[in-house]
Image (cartoon, rainbow, N blue to C red; front, side, top):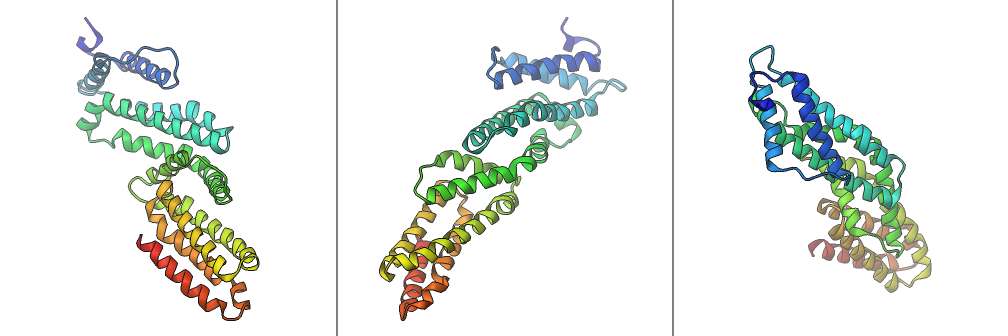
Length: 284
């Protein structure tokens, strides 16, 4: 007779079986030698959970099981995810972060399936929400500044003509969006604000040099090209909501640079041409 057919499954027996399943999933995610989960295995684990949370008191282990699932997610983060990220930097860190986040979501999805009867029966917060919250609190809060600064550095490198992995950057920045749990506050406050500030600083420096290096017609062309490139950045890896803010910052810095006022008649031409260019790009 199998465990789930017995009269009662005690907490230690049931959790030992579930833990073995969790360990197997961890090994699979880490690429360690491990066979794939069969549908029968997953359903057996789910039915074990169901049995353990429908037994008569004092053998209804619903709340204790739920807490153990939460603890399992935290343990996975602390023992596996964070150590893999802490010593890495720049693009190596980005690749690790994207992979670890993808693996973590698989773990959360798998645990959500195993615990589906428990969550539905007791009207508890879904493990998907719990998992995202714990990742945000334990991982995102620790690394988001480091990640943000590295992303901005890469953006500036691209502005200087270097090649970067745009697809990787897009995946990293989407994590900022996901951390908002349906809102844009993490992306806007933890990344976008600093990115726009850096953009303003970058183009203010460029304007101070370009106004001396180029004729006014060439300056206009240069500024117009910058707007085009920034629009492309939005299309390739920034969130679409950043576009009007980014273009406004670029246009303001390139138009309002005080050096423009030092050459007779030029300011009117620059203002009219750049404002026109900006309005055109906003409509494309």
